Length: 284
Image 1 (tube, rainbow, N blue to C red):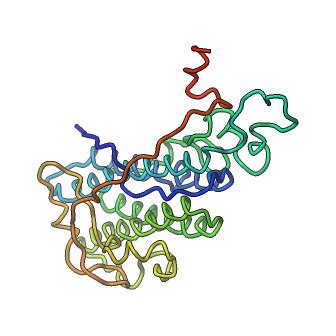
Image 2: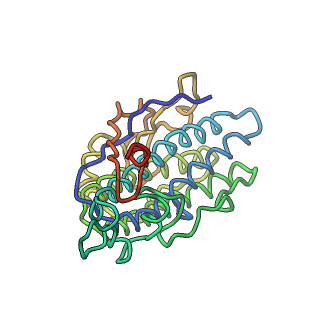
């Protein structure tokens, strides 16, 4: 069973609406290497795990639980990037402008037509998320290898998307996720290391200096690149794997820690121009 606390795992930094940025960060939510896939892949692998070496199952499950909060964070980031786009008054209100003209420029029009300025389970080009993205080979080594490539490709894409906008809402979320993807690379590399594989000269991927991303520095200073958050309320064996020297070239010591205290969810105002939530229509 699962319990929920209505806090985000990281802050949403306020900035102006930016539907173009919302379009590209959709890749981090619903793309082939996005947060919805990592969440579901680790979920299936942990539930389908066989055998007595449940420390590996606990590692998969622990990262799955964090990925739930990543999906939530990216959704709220997209919502904040979209909310406030265009004129708020519906029906053009006698002006010459179009209230939602942002939708036909460089944005994803489905964010306006279908989502009422909210996130969608799609990638950056609007393709729907697919269950076929999820791999569970039924073989621990195969799964760990696949997960390592998944996290590496995810951070590679995030580092590219980071360069596409200077919007603070956009960059803060990407920076946090870049650092956490590094930690998860360490987790899966360490798990493979316990099985006799030495990854020390290979990871992290991409080979970059994380400190060159200003928003990342504080998370590195907090040790988030070498930490695995424990969301379990009962006992876990994650620490049997996620401990000791980091397998990454960045070095440091791996440690299982409590998750962040949490940050408030941003308030979502009504959007009359989108008839959302539409309750005022009934009372008009």
